[in-house]
Image 1 (cartoon, rainbow, N blue to C red):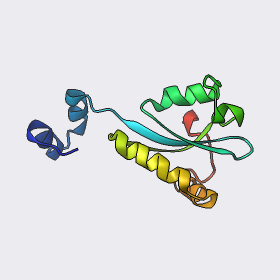
Image 2: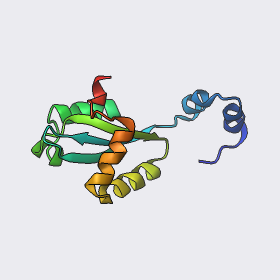
Image 3: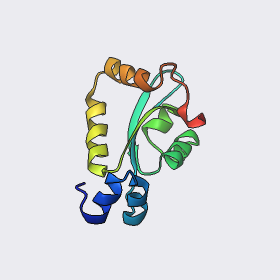
Image 4: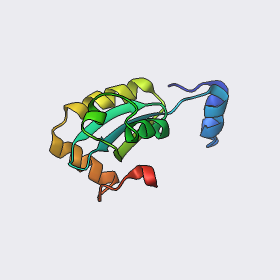
Length: 116
């Protein structure tokens, strides 16, 4: 997103929160959840708290419900949905070892980040 005019001025003054409020910029999240047995699920959402709640309570049929993936172990945030979708696709193509190393950069002990 290229900033122009007032948004650019606010950004240069370190007032990025004002830009989000004025222009209703959304946040998007790429996240990894894990089961107790280590099965990983990668997804994207615009509301991480709601989505993790849905996973933990098995409100949505599919892979995460079938394999009991409930523990948030990794996430990234962006304001560009296309970046989030591309990143999700990229992570899904990675070998398990590479995914595990990524998780360890944010969460070495694989704690449930949703509890923090």
